[in-house]
Image (cartoon, rainbow over all chains, first blue to last red; front, side, top):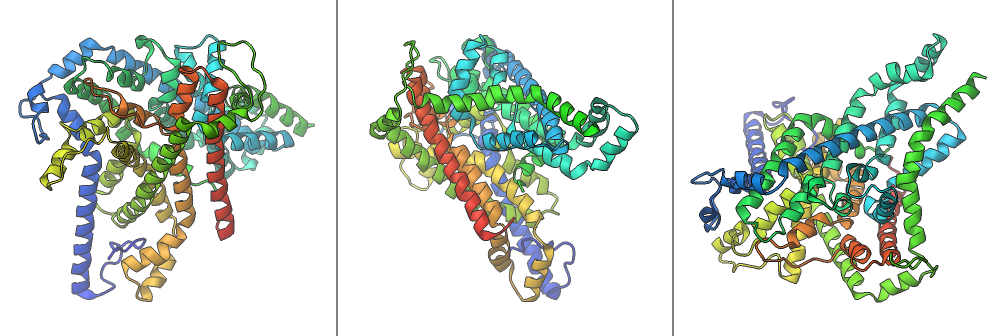
Amino acid sequence: MIDVADDTAVEPATTGGPVGRAKRRLTDLAIDVVLTVFGLLMVLPLIMLVANAFKAPQELLAWPPTLIPTKPTTENITAVLGDTPLLTWIFNSFTFATLSAIAISATSAIAGYLLAKFPSRTMNVLFAIVLATAIVPFEVYMIPLYFQAQQLGLLNSLPGILLGYLVMSFGIFLVRQNVIHTIPDELLEAARIDGAGELWIFWHVVLPLLRSALGALFVLAFFQAWTAFAWPLIVLSTAQNYTIEVGLALFQTGFTVDLGRLSAASAIVLVPSVTLFVLLRRNFVEGVASTGLKE
Amino acid sequence: MLKRKLWLFSLVAILPVMAIFAYVRVYPIYEVLRLSLHKWDILSRNKPFIGLANFAELLRDSLFRTALINTSIIAFGVLFITVPLALVIAALIHHRTRSRFASFYETSVFIPHVVSLVPAAMAWKWIFDAQLGPLNALLGVFGVAPKAWLFDPVLSIVSVIILCSWQALGFAVLIYLVGFKNLPRSLFEASKLDGASGIQQFWYVAVPLLKPITLYVSVATLVSAFNVYAQVYVLASDAQGAPGRQVRVLVLDMLENTFRNYRVGYAASEAVVLLVIVLILTAIQFSLLREKGTR
């Protein structure tokens, strides 16, 4: 009995009397159990990874694997922090993701607003180009972009990886839709009649109204850069410049690496990304949800 | 007069953004199309035009064919696991929106989608590990003989599908949740008066109404799965001198042709094939949407 779109909690007693109510409660309980088990299964791989980070080598070999370390040790963590520039990688990723999110928010805000509120034939053409390129996955044009970075002398540098993450077609689209829905033309006209300049209007009228859309976009862009893999992998070439994803992926291929250290390194990386996600969850969900609303 | 001033302002203001956009999006896309018709081996200075010769060679290239087949199997495998599962999970979560644990359900399903890809893939690499992995331990309980998940040609693809589905599920669930929230309540009340059970409502009311969402989620899942790379990279790389079997996928083949064989033009033609696949999928989505007359 899966009652989908109707919320039973609103009017529980309308159907069936006490027997029906008991049955409903039982169904809800069953669904709760299913969802809880499923949710735990989804995060179980990550929990076990963190558990492994605190296990001594003997325990890692134990069969079957334990969920909670019997003799927790921080040896793996100190070892991995000593062996690799892990904290540098995290810092690099953080800088890269933040700068990318700023660039994407700024370019999307400007272009989205102009495309929405200054209709002309040129703008229509530009918007068509933005929409058309939105379909093309990054992997398709990654290789020519690599040679552009090479020409600019930006290989193996932060500006080099940023080059691929300065704009987001979807971001421009998102802001444009938001401007159309939330900012009436009359508001802009009124400001103009009051003698406000265009830059003043953008900064003091438009941006404040776009705050929540831009917040969602910022978080979306941040996580996009934070989890970028193929592009930083081909652009970066020395350990000091690696982002965390690239650093870890290459680190795990080393011969001296054992499971404990690998798990420790992974766990150290997971903690900030999960924390960030839990903190910014609302924004993020909003951002992703709006990707599905291409009307 | 004022109109003209505004038009001029909008053009001047959008110019910097569009210049960046053209340089990092439009130009590389154009380049990839151009290069695919040329022979360019990095080392040689000249890039002769060779028409469709690269594509003709792709048809005979057994490595490329393997990559195309593997990638397609992975993409459709992820699709067939993710979309139905996401629909059911989203229905259950939506039904329990008022539950105290609702945000736990949502977050736990979504976390795999946002955590850094490489650490998450490493957790799964351990799970699939033939000797140490909990998956074989679990199967052992049911009397199933241990399997070499990451080495067997078929099982290694299954492993990639499982990992990618685990990551893709959260996105699909989230989009479906938005869809469920936007369904008209009146229809459900009407069907309830007609005596429809919860499962009947789900199957005969919600699922047909959610068709546009299903179409969008399916295409988005397929497109991102066709670009699979990091997961394969991590699962195959060797930790402790035990290399997994490299599952050849399109992006991997493309990067190998560029950076190992120095055949950029040839790699570009592979990128174009990837682009064509994505365009076909998108075209199918739009034509089906139009056919239905929804949205």
